Length: 100
Image (cartoon, rainbow, N blue to C red; front, top):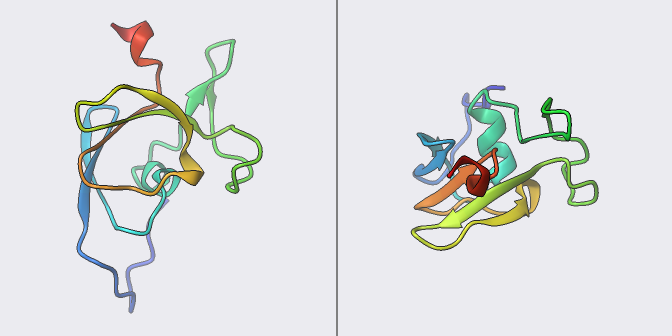
């Protein structure tokens, strides 16, 4: 999914890491917007290992659950549609404990 760029004024972009890749996001966007704009469109896996996307985008369904860490802080499992991006945010769509 591509951001609308024509005739849109946004604050200066910041960098967040999504699955280890540095990506551009803008203050005021949510983590869900950053994930969608990254062309990943994958938020988590279901119990069968199949990728899941976003569903409601208002914090009700939890389909957009990702793992988020601020700087070197601990990983927390949060709904991406409710968390605003901020500089230094690390986001992973796979359980960081399982990957370790």
